[in-house]
Amino acid sequence: MIRSLSALAATVLVFTTVGCKKDSEPSASNDAPAKKSSDADAKEPAKKDAAPAEKDDDAKAKGPADAGDLKPRYGQTENHDLEEVLQGAELLEQFCEYNNATLAFPFDVPVVLEDCGEANAFYDPEKHQISMCYELIESFATMFDKYAESEEMADAQIEGATMFTLYHELGHAVAHIFELPITGNEEDAVDQLATLALLSSGEDGRNMAIDGAEAFLPDEAESELQELPFWGVHSLGEQRFYNTLCLVYGQDPDSHEHMVEDDVLPRERAEQCPEEYGRVSKAWGKLLDPHLKHG
Image (cartoon, rainbow, N blue to C red; front, side, top):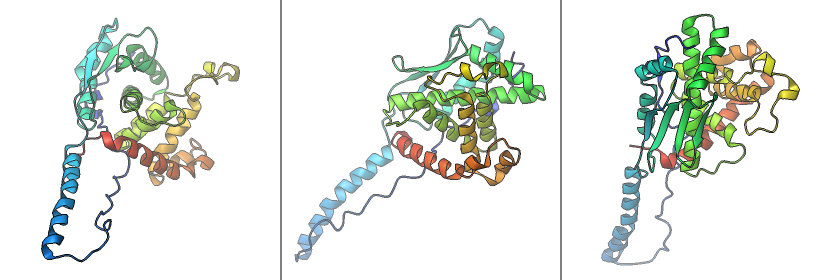
């Protein structure tokens, strides 16, 4: 059972640009063949050529159409104690506010905290709705309360896993709403996006990404080989754990060398992580750039 989650309000993170800037526009000054002309003839084409560039600049300044927002909503629940804690922390409100400042949505997208009948979180493409289930947050509490060294550490880990999950489902939402060309497994892709979004906010975000990774690790009772869902759309929990840690390490290997030294991240994988982080960050940056508010 969650005890306090008192720091939730202070650590909600901004969903920021996670890739490189757009390439500069090529010059159009050499398209037309050279010819002799009077001064008057030379000036007129120059004026005509300038108009499209001005229009392009205006379009870039305005950015993508912004006709909607993420909308926080609290659904039905029997866990009124947890509901009171989360409403008091304004978790959903701040998550939506910060992401609305960055992403331009074509319509409103509800972000709902509710009872679901199972420990889950999901994006509904028909309703265009993100749902975070109280049961899943309770499962995080059960997991981290069991292993954490202190109450404060458990609360911080629950916060981190909850935020990672919200960004994971936001990844599904933007992939669907913006019709992003995801290749490969979308579940893996939005794990990447959740990790990048958290990493962009510094040490607190890095810790939350690691908490999200740890939440993928199964209990010993669930780790029997014959019980693993090889057929599932999600990668196995251990794979998601190492994939997330690889991006954390790859962003700043020097600060996370302890992952390798402590045998948390195998060195064979760690050596590839900086390149993996750069590739994933660049790819998501290009995908999201047309839908970001650049002003």
